[in-house]
Image (cartoon, rainbow, N blue to C red):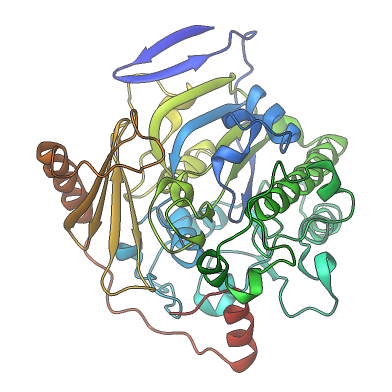
Length: 447
């Protein structure tokens, strides 16, 4: 492979035939896999066969090795992806807060440019009462918690979402207009209940009974019958494989309809998932890498295969999606990834530090900032943990006391990014009726 240095940003590209020019009005599909950590995919180095479809997509597209989510919670991460703003700038940091109507979403800009916009959602924290339906012609919600049924069928989302999306492609789409689609899969999110056959495909790799304390930390809605760490991880992996197979079906369906040559497919996640790496299960508890490092794959017309080692943020998808469609992107906290996609000349990708924010289960706001080597965690703006990710990728040794200059540098970058936009006004709280509250609490969305 040929290494091409773009300024200080390394992109490794696979030689390919001369590419065709990109379509003037491409379709864009965002496949959002809720709670998927990057290091459980084969293309990110995982040793188990969880993701043959996504690995093949990564091989023919652009894989971002160091993508970081803007938050460890769906309610903050998804408004950040669709507005390009940090959580404290769009104002939805806590469970009940509503995205302000004054916020501009990518869907609104796509629709104003003549695109059809369709969203298929399977997470109750994204119900339209929280404001993220702005700009979507179709915003279809599937509650995977309170539906009738038991076991895996009750929580399955991929087959249902994709069937609805394909119905829309065949019956609701105007073939004379391009479209933006967002499919928000639930299947990898806990409770980890893979369909029949998939648990056998990826069985536990060993036995490690949970201690009483570890078991007590599991939320009731996520608890499995077998109180063993390997069983939880294997069930999570099996769900990834199930969803990977369904995504393969979707990609084949697009090709059968002749849409693959005019469609960009983006795969990412809102956050990762913890399996006791820092004493936590699930997500929302810390800003360590198991909760922030997410996959990011972009494949489509005119994109040569590449691996990007530069640190990027899910905030960057806001300007990137718009610019792929030829739509001007307004100012945001995101940086366009087009220079890293080999699609622009004379410009460079400007981000060197990715910032994330979280609030809700603690007082104040927890923040994290990472570059290629260093990772700083702050309580509000006070540094509390610093890690050398090269020497300690699992973030087990806090070196804050020995590296004050690195902490000072990263803290200054956080302050700079926070100053780019005024803080959002006091957010309005949504009305949470008993049914929605039951659904949210069943998933651990409590504060």
